[in-house]
Image 1: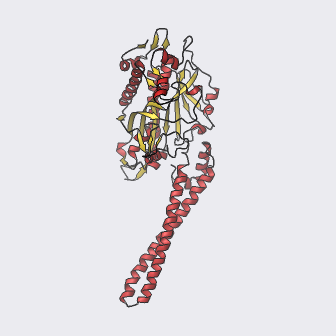
Image 2 (image 1 turned 180 degrees about the vertical axis):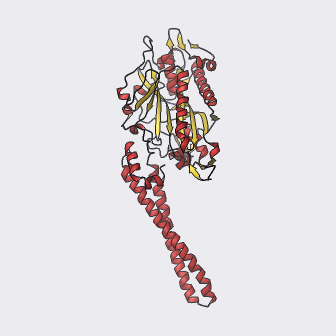
Image 3 (image 1 turned 180 degrees about the horizontal axis):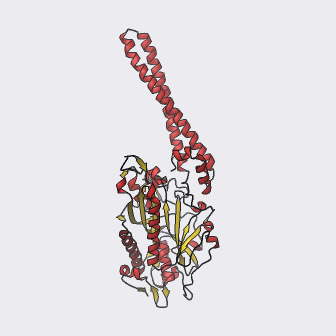
Length: 439
């Protein structure tokens, strides 16, 4: 959530930032916040003045009664009663304005950093790095035509490989639950477990503390990290208890620090978590959602950092290097995208996507987003830290990234490593699978 200080003191910059994200009605939303804040402050000022006046008048009542001036005392009592009635109205106005302002603030996205490129959608994202070729400034997805040729004759897509080697049963998932809930079998299940353990072990080596959080959260947690209000209907809602199935471990792990004041020496906090994730993916259909490409339930390892403002960009860089290291060890062709303003998430200030190439499908698959949210989530969460030297309390910065999401990694591993003998397992993963080929 943007701070009032940002909106009121940097109004023009705020509107420009929102327009860079193509947020419709940016000026109107900012004006509404400023107007509601004015009502709130005006009511607060009047209330404070009335309370001070009532206190003075109350002191007069006792003196008048002692002096036997009962009529005058009763008149002052009536004046105090009138002030109390006005105060009640002012309190209601102030509370209503504050609540309305909070509602509007919840609908306003985060501001993008200056280095975020202009653009409307995925085609305008910048390709900043790849293990296929050197990237140059201004390379966009729309003009970047480099696709690897892995030398596989007539490669099969992963859903056919899964059937051929009895790794994943999509039809059985439909029977048990519905489309988008696959059943992993035998070496398919072992491959999943191996990837989970590999990713967690690598996170541990990088200094992340493993967390095993709930996969069901309350509404306050959803609001804290910005998943609520759920504008796109992506979250599964347990209506009786008003709980939500998590779309990512970012939600419960970051909410550990809701309403917490950390000491500066504790930062950066580095956590990781493996969870199942649940997304309705409303409106998804067609070839791009076939097989493992887009699921309603999937496994993911998330890395989360809480940091102080001056170090958060360095933290972001380290997180990007960590994710890139995983893809290198899995020997996958990858590229890293800097998302343009129009393709950024609601809460991020800057975001990089990692994509791996799918040989059989002939396209790139997103496997990770690594974001810096600046103070946006922290303001919602009231996640703060205390400066060691001054004792001053400030908002933290929050960051998170997938390290990694499994479905599309599995898809790329199966498709890109198929041989006449079977599916080759990357060397870094063999200690976790216990086998080097699926045949």
